[in-house]
Image (cartoon, rainbow, N blue to C red; front, top):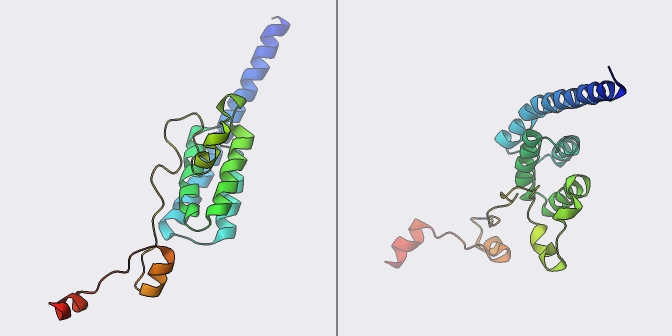
Length: 154
């Protein structure tokens, strides 16, 4: 065997170990992310701790999908912190070829592409709905009309 063959076997072994580690991470983080999403958790410490852990494995597509799901959930809780997590992903995993032009920077704050065609936030953010007309006006949402009010007007 030549030195080249030995080096190739060594690199192949490292790649297989890395793949196994990525798979273990997805197996470990899937129930955590699913629990956060299912319970609609607003525990920012738990969410951020999970995002911090997942960030290291975003080179693996299933881990990236978990990261995106959790970012979508966290966006409605803390949009500024979510933007920081998206930027942290870009700094760690995006290549220089995927750098954006200055005109596109504002748009990219709301997306996470990772070379894929599906952006992180593919739909516009939801506006809060509220029963309190004063709060609805402040948030830009329309206050819901009660059926009782409609009957009185008729």
